[in-house]
Length: 364
Image (cartoon, rainbow, N blue to C red; front, side, top):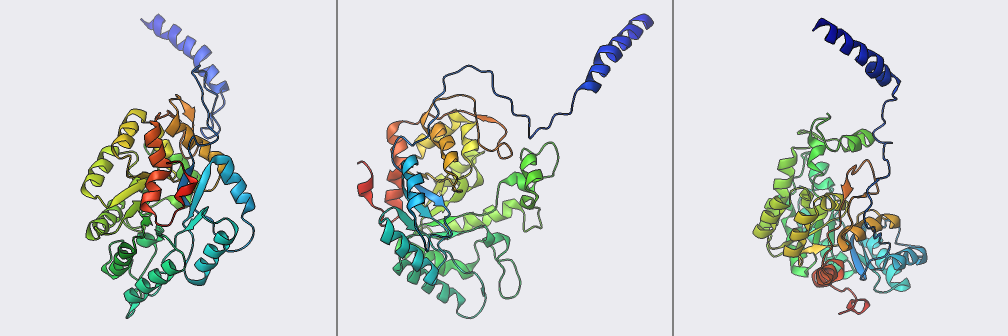
């Protein structure tokens, strides 16, 4: 027995530990070897049908030529871009006028609320009046950034919750004008978890440390999401577009229950296509069930990245990479959605939900 242990120890030391000591440490972020899997590949650089992107940001649309932007849009088959960063007042008006004068029908602008001064006498009425004025100047929806719930404070320095009653007149006015409210509340739940090897978003948090949150910075994730849902319930006459699948793209059973309970809520999948692409059967069934309540959204304007979205939605491809390793280190699979569902996701749902879109740009 002693001899066996001695021989085994010699083998491990000679061939194991020695060999291990010669191996370089693996850089997880850099380690991204091409797959040896041989399967059919159908990369898609242009959407099968013309589409509307309801989640984009073009901060400088108020002046200058939009011809370069249109060229890139045409290459993708992107017929209408919704710019969620319209601001308000004169800035919004300039954006709308500049887009209409150059390419009528190709751009839609959502406005944004100036939350400063909440709590001052007459603030709620003033904010609702601004919604009306921005609508008159061409805004066709309201975008609420995650600063509401994160950093917006009232005139006494207190955090303003998403369901603060002082905001009720805003949501009510949007409902009256049939302006959808696209709202981003919180961030992915793992951003609140501990920074350890059990955190699936560890690489992203290491490379983007400002995204890390905690129960006191600014509040627990569960509370922020609950505030949003209470606001949805309180205003059934207003259509809300929950950005990023409401941060439940990795828990579609939960999102299913929420959408059943909240018929005034629709969703878009900006920046979360990687979550959907790694659960192709579950996501496929969800898209079929809620085919009338899902909108196409991308979030950041990087034309080359749209190919990932098209491939997930349109093909049955297997095990292909996402375009940002830090964001999704796993591989994805196509949902192979039926054509009629694709048409709804790409343009039919947006035409129904957002007023004033040019339906002549799309097939019937």
